Length: 330
Image (cartoon, rainbow, N blue to C red; front, top):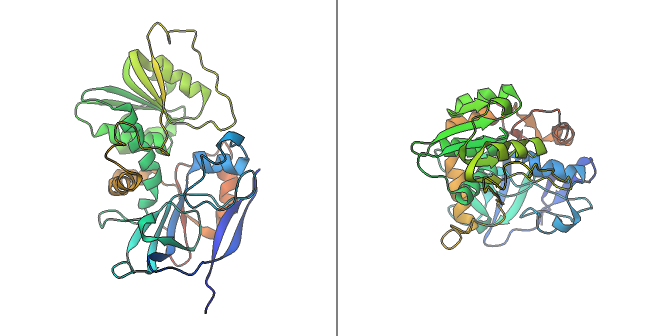
């Protein structure tokens, strides 16, 4: 029997990454053998893992669905993978699928671990599905209403996706806020307003925070109107956050709520499971406006160096897409 192999990215915190050879397990009757075409680095989580900045208490809770290894040791981590089915049950070979799988050239997973990518969604854009799922869950937690004045603080990938989803609600006014004025290009492509923190519009009905900074979260508190909610998407890892709660936080009766994609939002949990939510996220990637979020593609062999670059706070890359052997770079 032929032994099949692949290559995968492993992170060894703090700040080391390498490509290693993998031996693929033999597929079962209900398994798929998938050849990866694209993956994407989920910058917020993956750089925290790379930096060794995941709190001890979260080693188990934050495991990626197909993670190998255990923190604080070396791990194969990641969850934005689009590939083509090479082998599997009847009807599956040749199909393009999304899977919450790490950065690996080929892999074997059960049929129920993948979401078929609809024809309307380009495979290269479908790598946004994991971040889109986070954005969908945030909207379910925040429950924006028709006509709301909504601010999104932090124009990274997730914040921009939240802004784009809110923009399509009837009558809403959406403002995307970031300290980097170059992100105005992103806001323009998504057809939402842009502002720097000092120019942002106050008295908002709902504020989403996604900058992963103390300053951004405090900006969100300032912008929220009376009895408004601030929905916190950022994960700070081991880094503490300092909040200015001595101002109007209490007198305005503000609410600061966490949202986290590991659990389906309570408002939808009775009817939605993770697979249905992920399928929705993949379908929402049909929007061509989302292409503004991608940096120039890089080849799989460059991944270790890419992780070092993305972990630098000065780097302003939004979504870093990885192109695998045999797939042309865009």
